[in-house]
Amino acid sequence: MKKIILLLALVLFLLNSVTYSQSDKPVALVKKVVKIVDYNKGAETDWESAKTGTPLIDGGQVKTGPKSLALVLFTEGSLLRVRENSILNIYGSKEGNRVKRNTVMEKGTLGFDVKKQGDDEFKFTTPTAVASIRGTDGLIFCDSTVTRVYLNGGELYIESTTDPTKNGKIVGGEKISMDLDGNIVKTELTEDDKKAVEQAKTQSIKKIIIKTPNGDLQIEYYSSDQK
Image (cartoon, rainbow, N blue to C red; front, side):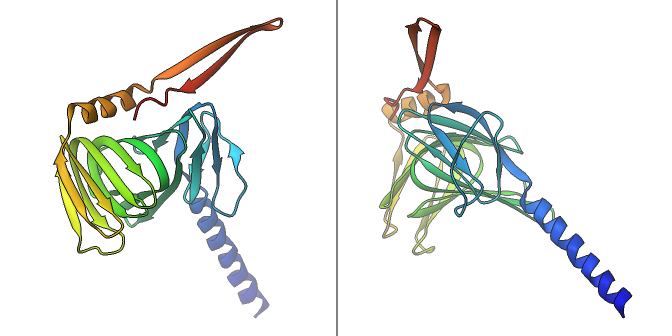
């Protein structure tokens, strides 16, 4: 009986170890940091300063300050540009051979370049909408009342967080907005919209060099006029 109990305890320990190692496995990393970028390993953990190469696990968060920028690279190659004053939650899980990736944005602006997913899934969730993306790039703006998406290429399916029957689809060259009531407005991108998408891709960084007695001090910040 004692041997059986010890064996069961060992099995439970191994299962817990496997579960922990899987949940602790990075689903993305911080590729670049400009000015104020913080991260944590989950909503219940403390914020820390992010650095280039900082791993992001399932449930982790990234937060950018004024004139700041974070580039987040997923393990399959998709790239997100988290622009100033934004908060992003990172999720990734595997079900059989299928990987589900979801980024939950509470507020802010996000540029994205999502690789073709095959059978995998990549979603963006905001307070008003859930957007499913397969191999495309563009911009997302959101706050607590509305979500706007500018799509440069590929296609995107969007549905309301309050009423999934209210949904829509756009392709490259179109934009869509959805409010809390699920109301949808879909139009073609204007020239200014196209410029905004392209400017976000350039990751325009400005530098200030300050002369000091101990040498030059270089400060980088993200140009916030790209909106």
